[in-house]
Amino acid sequence: MIVAVLKNRLLQLTDRQFREEDFGADSLLELVERHRDLVAIDRGVKPVVVEWVGSPSAIRPPAPVGRVRPDLWRAMLDFSSGLHYEWDSEAGQARPVEAADPALRIPTLDPATLASWRTAFVKEYETTVSTPEDLQRLRDWATHALGSQGLPRPLRARWNEHLKNAVVARLTCWFLAAGRPVPAML
Image 1 (cartoon, rainbow, N blue to C red):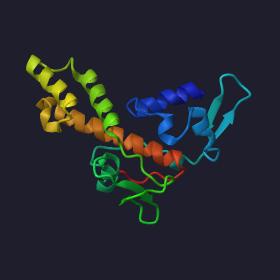
Image 2: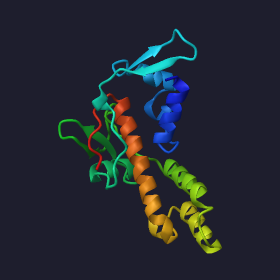
Image 3: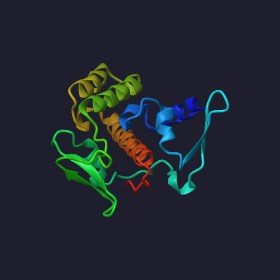
Image 4: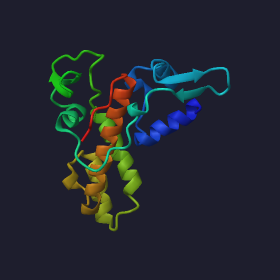
């Protein structure tokens, strides 16, 4: 596929949250070039084409319904403790550390990213609420970073699923970009 199509697919898989900068790259092509064991790049055509040549087992389907493993959930959402999280390949789990090795550091969300996910959720669902009170509650939930109990009842499960899918997508991208097997998330 051409690089632009690949970018669109990554944006779809990550609820439009994929950014090359999160993986230390200035462009998607730069990021893809780091993984020549998984992809072939054909620069002889315009636009440039990227072809998957890695093992089919390196690709995982979207996560089924369930909870994200506690170690991975904490590694993604614990931005207030000051801890970093590293992937321990031998133990097959995320572990908290005070100073993470950059090559092993799991990309914990920052408050701004979580706020942007909330804002996107509000935009997606604000036309589905049935009362002005529920609309205000939805907006207050995003503005004040409230827990899911701050949402109108019909949106709580949707937000939890939205957040879970975004976390799984971000983790999956991180493992693949780092050239590591994607562990069971749930």
